[in-house]
Image (tube, rainbow, N blue to C red; front, side, top):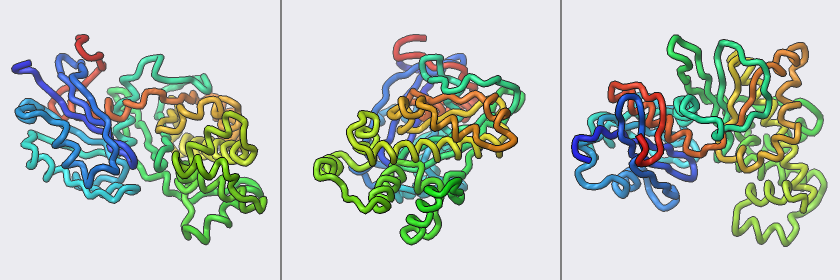
Length: 343
């Protein structure tokens, strides 16, 4: 529509890129259109943006923002698990945009959490919400973490690279896991365990520990689908014992690190579990191992039981958050997202 104010938003992960265009009016973002792209088909975001934007749209875009899975410094970054070098100022000039901001993908997710509805989350632990900070942890291709710092306007996301902190084993099996991974990686971070590749690492560790090999049936599936999706699928269907053990260990370490983040950020307002993996393994998260590890903090066990914990189900949350940030760049605070065609 002529004269319509637009914002452009993107969520660029290690595997996929989500792009969307929204109209902006009176604090409401209404979806114009959105698309999903497989990153392995592109050399960088230039090709994706070029294929998404229609002729003449750039001049109507008042603000643009991209959330990326990497630390952003000076509006530039290199994606940690993809290697793309992204320069926000160069992209702005290439496409003739008024402004374009790059932000960390967990910061983007943090901007989006406030726009979610009840159907967009699943409550793992109701707890007792209290005024204060909140936190985000999200496992996918990597492991992202962020703090939602309480301020006068609600919560403001602060990016981090907490997923790359040192893995701290809590029992004999986890010590063995660390010893298994150290010769492979040297530095073993939580991301080496709590991520898609991390789940595959755990499965391979358990096979090595038990002196077993991958069953031929699973080997064929993994070649076609990837290791992590097969391990989680077999585990939840109860069709392979090693896969079940791997997912149980994954969920436990995930919960422990979510608890660590909650303590470090004093997240009395709640912890959100985002990323692409959590909704796919929701039955495993509900089974109890995640919360048991989350609460297992010694003298702070009761305190942890009072922190609300929710799983983010909406896989567009990061993109919605980028749109919210883009609206700020355009001089307006977004308060709600409307479906396409609905004001």
